[in-house]
Length: 294
Image (tube, rainbow, N blue to C red; front, side):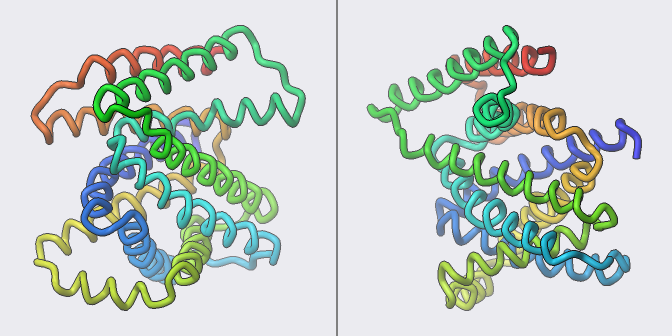
């Protein structure tokens, strides 16, 4: 697979997930972040199963790789996405995805703390830019609500951390079993996430089935569309890219997500981005540029 194909898939994954994020936020406000995420996981579990069986994408998998993938789904698709969607509800999808795009920085800090890899001057300046970006969002929340809303930012960073952990586990599984196929990997991860939601509330899926059945067809179509685009397509694209891509560069491409969803929010709500968001984006883009050219 060429570099162009790999990173085209990565961009596609970011755009599909970002677009669905606005719908996730709507239903998280109506029900809960757990509700919308467990619906998404149930839908994509079935679609990945069908896709795997139809395509014949199954190979022998080691027990270690299965364990990595189950834990990846449990941590990232279950708990990580629940925390991230909670942040969507209060901070908005665009601001949450800006914070979500801190993964390259987090990986760099991990390398510095645990692997002894020093930061260059540009990387140090990137850290400063990202810290300023977070402070601007916190200042905006303080102006709007009268508090710093540390809880919402904590939800966002918990989601980011768990998703990054899941990404590294999935890449480790690919390293152990290079023949792993995308649909098969996603199915196993979804099993781990599904098990997590069952553990949280064993009867929740029965309740949810009744609630979804009572909805209008238009709402059901919207929910299914969000689950398929933000779940099935996004994960299929992302994990296909993850198998071959450089991790740091792949996570850096997440910059496309907040830019895209910010444009969508402006169109949907028919208003221009405010001063805080524009200034934060300026520091955000500067930080990413510095990280890409260390």
